[in-house]
Length: 280
Image 1 (cartoon, rainbow, N blue to C red):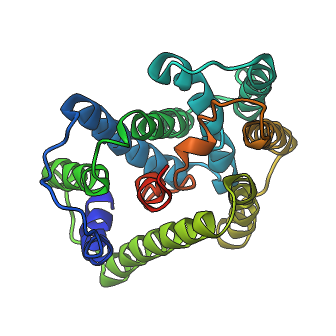
Image 2 (cartoon, one colour; image 1 turned 90 degrees about the vertical axis):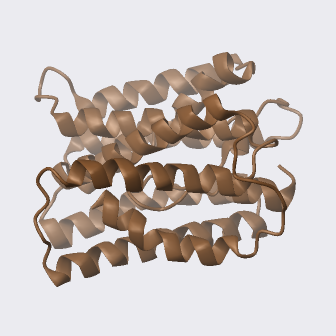
């Protein structure tokens, strides 16, 4: 699925990159950071695909929504930023929310849960790397290297047990690529038209759509622990967003300045495009 999603994304992204007027080559200025981000983006995508395939949709989103908390934590060692007591309190509360969703001890933690956690962590790390070296790297480098890596690695792995897919499945994967690309473009348009503090909380509505789609398509029902845990995670994430957006509160805004795509299995990261369009 990842191989064909990447394959179908190449034409869409190519049309988008045709508008890139900057001159230069595709060799990264920071090869090790680019390699680390590429590996993180691959693990992020694999984790998302696997988690969504085995866990209830809303539960996966609840875990992935911990990314702003992880970004806040990673900004300290990677970016050298300072995090105040208020945001630390929000991070701790959010991590408690993750524990409530996972409820260790009362339910068995599966590989799907670990995949969702990996998606949240490595997605946050990939965003932090963009913040770290984004001013010096071309947008096309950030976009194409993970795609090429997915194409090569997944293509190689696929040769071991690939079975020809029905045409309807190939059409579904093409739809994943199209929807992911469209969602990324709309998210870029939203961030260009409004402040990040307004747009970012709107992405939390994904858990509402996940609940609706899960109910109608897969007969999934939310339990109380997932609802409570998701509420804690969302509240802490929104607090961090609003805290960082307040003028004069802090010059360090790792979450708002590390804008990315929402947690999904296929859409591309928008941070590099926004950095080029807005100068940060």
